[in-house]
Amino acid sequence: MKYILFISIVLLIVSVSLLISCKHKIQTNNVNYTETIDSVRRLFIPDIRTTAFLSQKIENEVFIIESNEAAKLDSIATKLKEVAPNLNFLVNYLPEKALGENTYGLINNSVANMRSAPKHQAELISQALLGTPIKIFKKLNGWYFVQTPDYYFGWIDEQALKILSKENFNKWIENEKVIVTVNNTFVKSAGNSPVADVVLGNILEIKNIEPQKTLVSFPDGREGYLQNSEIQNYTEWIQQDTINTELLKNTALTFLGAPYLWGGASTKATDCSGFTKSIFFSNALILQRDASQQTLYGELIEAEENYSNLNIGDLLFFGEKATVAQKERVTHVGMYIGEGLFIHASGKVRISSLLPQDELFDNYYVSMLIRIRRLTGFEGKSGIEKVSESNFFSLQ
Image 1 (cartoon, one colour):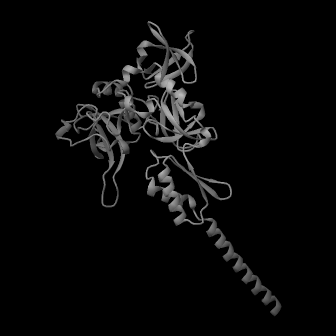
Image 2 (cartoon, rainbow, N blue to C red; image 1 turned 90 degrees about the vertical axis):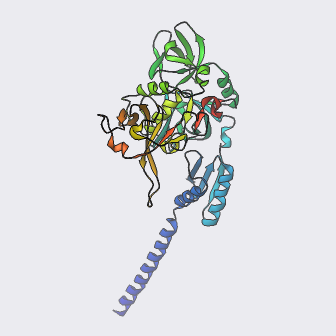
Image 3 (tube, rainbow, N blue to C red; image 1 turned 120 degrees about the vertical axis):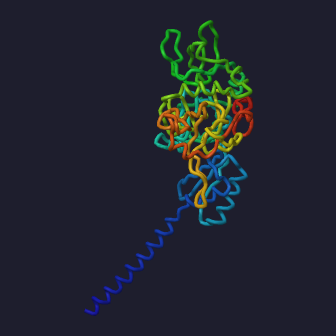
């Protein structure tokens, strides 16, 4: 009996020891280095929308951290060694060397989806239009990590891109081009068969101009015809110096009924800031991608009674005002079109009113109105960049 009791005690001690050892091992393995890396990253790169930062776990419990900002990446690496001495990581400066000279590209589809990670299941964060010049920083599993002219970073499927060397990109810059000025149409073959769809803001090269139509070329070499009534000469388009408010309004109204899509930025489907971004691109201006970014630029307007001092083209920003307990959150944007009305993408592109007596009065959004910005007079300033002055649309 004593022998059995002794064996039982020994087994209990061994079991407890194994449990403690196992628990210690689990706690050790559960160190969340992903969160550690992200918390350090926020110290030096608070906004990964416009500054590249990638973190990936690779074999043998080693992480790789990457950025296009060398100084900031070095600072992150130094801080990580201080706060997580057991973390094994490698540093990679972007663009990655494997790309060689092929760090330029053009969007090759009417609309290309930009995602938060290199897979189709990842969040749609933005879209880029046919003929949009991009900068390429990394390739992974058939996806490219790119930056668009609004300085936004994201992943685009290689099937939607034409990759170019600096030399070939500069040839494209110098070639004659057109921009599509209708919401939706088709490039057609000489036999009138569809080659591909195109949408408002798409840019294509000119091959030959005829009395009624123009032979155009896609970045990948496909050719077809567009009616001259559907396009404008690219050089004339980028020479716009000031905001044409009537053009803004007329362009906005053509979007009416377009479905809402988180991350959308085209006439096919759009979110609120993608919509305002598209409208101003018709005036050859590049706005920042998100409402929380767009709200930082232009002249601040204090609304008078019945909003009588607002002008067509003023941007209205909605959300949650700052309190002692929380920071301001800008969650929506629309554009003023006169007579107390604003147009915005909410469910679909639609018109709402700021005025309580109007049938279209939208108390939900009016109650959340945070500020109004006027962009007229700020063309070419920070956050309201002219296409003609953009480094993306210039010789490299």
